Amino acid sequence: MTMGATLAWPAMAVLGFVVLTCLVVALGTSSTAQYEFEHNGARERGREGANAHGSHPAGSRSGRRSSRGTRAQAQPQAVDVAVLPASAAATGGPGWWLVDDSAQVLAGPFADRVDADWAALAGGLPAVSVHGDRRSDGGVTSRTSPEERTFLGELGEQLDRLPRDWDDVLSDTDPLTTLVVEVAAALLEAGLPLYDAAQGASAGGVCLLPEFTSEGVVVSWRAHDRMSLRDVRGVAATDTVAQSMNVAVGDILWNLGFVVEPFGATGTSLVTALR
Figure (tube, rainbow, N blue to C red):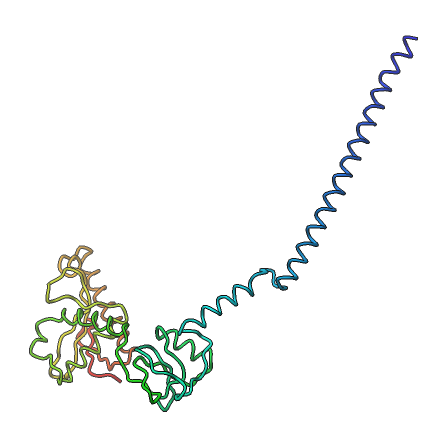
């Protein structure tokens, strides 16, 4: 009797464990089946929604593109331009226009030159960009653009830095004046400032001096006062920097279309003309 009871309890425990294991497996299988059913249903609904919005993975991409296109049509600098017959185009204020070889407007106005050039490239238009006022005959009266006015103001500030050697030379009719203005403009476009000799500034820059015998401009580099006057890094470093920068400035001007000749033993250049 005692032996039978002793053996019955372990058997019941094993049987209970087996029953609980089966129950857990059944519940897991049911939950997995329910998840798969809901997941497949959601995927089908998503596929139906994607079909309704187009085949692109972004769904609303075409909608955004159409709205962007609507905004572009409302702006004058739209890339998708058409050739405008002179008789059909109304006159407009200052702006950037695309004109053909006969100086007739093909498209415009555009907000800036980049938009105009891009429109010509995208539309395959045989045209150049011109800033000015549109005339009733289909031509353009050239005007100085805002970008050019800004640059001319910056150039004027650079020319004010020229040393006193230029005071008796600068005039509207002197060829040397034209040359030094061209050199200063090229250096400004390259990001190289002139040395402010008029104010005796400590910062360095490019020095421009007149050379009357050759009717040219002597171009050299002046380092900061710490190097050019006090040799804080030593005489050898000062000489090396001066030599390297003189050669670099001369190469830049030559690549920008100037006639450049060696002048002196320190790499200084003499600019005599535009090629």
